[in-house]
Length: 227
Image 1 (tube, rainbow, N blue to C red):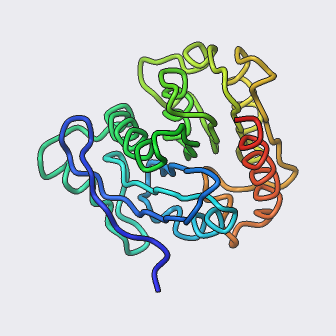
Image 2 (image 1 turned 90 degrees about the horizontal axis):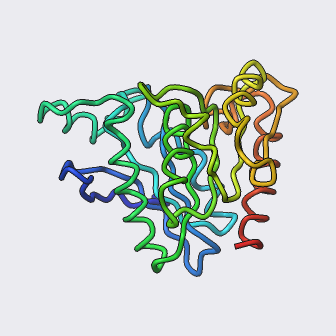
C-alpha cells in the first residue's frame, strides 16, 4: 500500500504542479519537500516515510526546474516545457511559493517547515524571509545558485529556526552564505563524513546518512517545541 497520494494544484502562473502527499493523522506539523535541479519529487520517496514516522505530514513537489531520472517523470517540468515556459531556478520560485500556500492550508492555516535541496534550499532560505507561513527552514547544500541575486545579503533578515548542512567539501561555502544571519537562528551541521550534495545525503545508500538524520530529527523536534 502506497504511503502517499499523487495530487495536483496550480502554481502562481496557473501551471499544474504534481506532488506526492504523505498525510499523517494528528500530525505534529507539516513539511514541504523541494528537490534539487537534476531531480523531481522522487528525491523524497525514501525520506518522507521516515518523516511521517516522526509525526509530520509531508508534501513533495515537482518543480518546473528539474529532470526525469530514475524512472520517474518530473510532471511539472514536462508541462512547463510543453507550454513553452522558462524552467530556470528562479522560475521555480513561484512553484515553491504556491506549494507553501497549499501546505499552509493543508496544515489548518498554521505555519509549515520547508526542506530544500541544492537550488531549492537557496529558494527556501530566500522565501523564508518573505512570508510568515514558514516557521522553520531546512537547507541541504544551499549556495549562490540564483542569478542576479546575492543570496547572502538577501537572507540576512532570517529570523526563524534554520538548519543548514552540506557535504564536507561544501562546509566553507555554506558558512560564507550564512555569514550575515543572526547566529541564534542558525543550526549549522558540519559533517565529519563526506555526505552527498542535497537532500540525497539522507538516503540509506549514502555513507554517514545516520549522522544527518540524527541532527535533522533533533532540529525538527526542537523547532516544534519553540513554535
